[in-house]
Each structure stands twice: as structure tokens, then as C-alpha cells.
Length: 103
Image 1 (cartoon, one colour):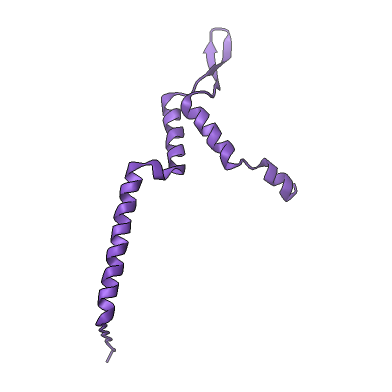
Image 2: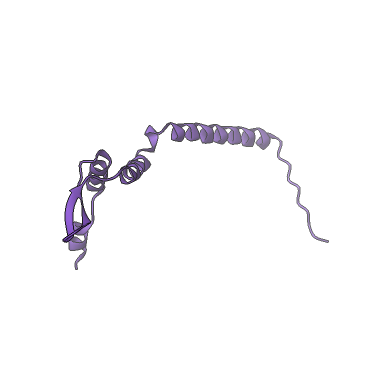
């Protein structure tokens, strides 16, 4: 298989997001095998709640800026970085280096 053929087989992000969205909304059907008195039968059903929740979680991983927890964590990390930069700037004025050499 050539690289071009392989690239055509690879799912693009938009397609993956579309499929996850369909699962999360319950628009996609899945085939299930159901035992019957005469053997087995196949039927179409919508994804169950667990599958839909899993799809929603996967979608939210791709849109972290919409998540309030993500925003709070980002604010905290930004504040910590600014504080560390400020401390580094304050200590740069009076630099003290202590080097302990083994005897």
C-alpha cells in the first residue's frame, strides 16, 4: 500500500468528531444480536447511556476551553507562572551562589 493510499484510509479529525457527535446524540444505530426461540435475530438499536456518555467525554477532551474546570486550572497555572517569574526577577538583583565542594 502506497503512502497516498494509506492516507486515504486514515480517518480525518472532522469525520471522527462527526461520528462521536452522532453517537452522543443517539443518531447512530448499532446492530445487536438477540437470542430468540428460533435461534438468533439481529436488530438495530440506539447507543445506550454508557456509550453516549463515553462519546461525550471524548468530545469534551477535544474542546477543553469550553470546560469550566479547564478554565480554572488554566487560571491557576498562569498565576503560578507569573508568581514564579516575579520571584525570579526579584532574586536576580541580589544573586547569591553557594557552592559546596567535597573535601
